[in-house]
Length: 387
Ligand SMILES: [Zn+2]
Image (tube, rainbow, N blue to C red; front, side, top):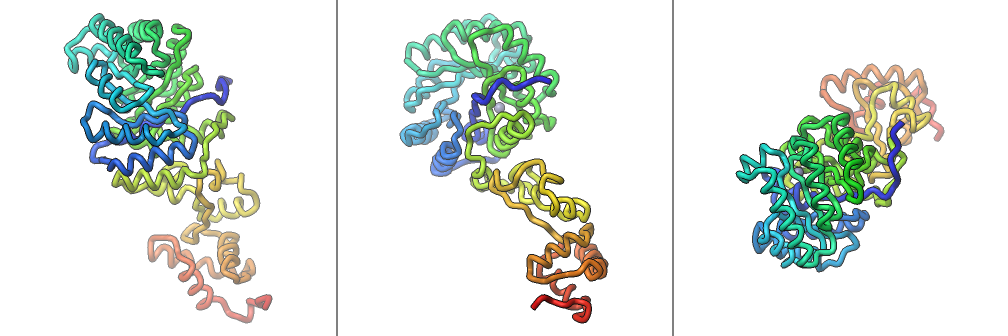
């Protein structure tokens, strides 16, 4: 069994930077401020707030977030250039993330550089950021998953020796699986003492959350996440998934107000112009809704029977719905909540009508429809009500 180190793991939320990089998403300055406030209220320790180099509007927004004086540390994202570092400094942030590609492919095709040039530029810029007195410098190694691991180790040692506190391992294209993630992060952690490693996972094969957990198990100290996994292409690791999986699978309870997750998810999706999928893990509308007869009967006896986590903990509530696969226990419960006492034989009789109606409509029935079936098909003689 691989044990997670402890509960001092850091969530570094990048909804406002990588989340906004999702195609078609454009937050207003006001929305960015509101989301930052919500993340802070929830207790997220670090917020990557934006890219100052984009222009004066983005700089003004990042600066406004800094001026809120939140408890969360505000980080500006920059490329490894003097200009970007200056733009970040102009926003008043204390923390800077300096990003540089580390795979030969991106170095060559994006920048026309080789490894030596990358190391030289990185050294120069980290030193420059030190001179400019940033309190917290960290380096984002873009495309780490396609980099030569020995070169990545070289990069990590260099930035550590220059005073950077953390290296972000970015699986920029979401190419890893949890097994490879674990191996690579373990090697990096074991090879470079005195430098925190962060995992930044993408979800192109649906493994962002799994890869994030694998990296944390391998010794990474922080996770870069976004609300609902909002991000480029298939998105990033979802903050809610990572936090709740840490709690339920690893017994690592981070000090976050998880009850606000649903509310935050709705806020971010509204601002992103996206619809929250009903089956979105943790925060989707349907993930605590139960209908099948077997599951409902079990849940009514014990809530652990068919729920992996408690809905209240993430701002959700348990719902039962009545439809094609409902059983009599569910129907008795549902009508009971409407003040009608149903006997098991009555329930079995009514179920046939419920199922037929649900198939006709191809959906669950609402309370009104269930009541109509009850009044039409339940003979009062066999239904002695208590009042
Ligand atoms: Zn990314």
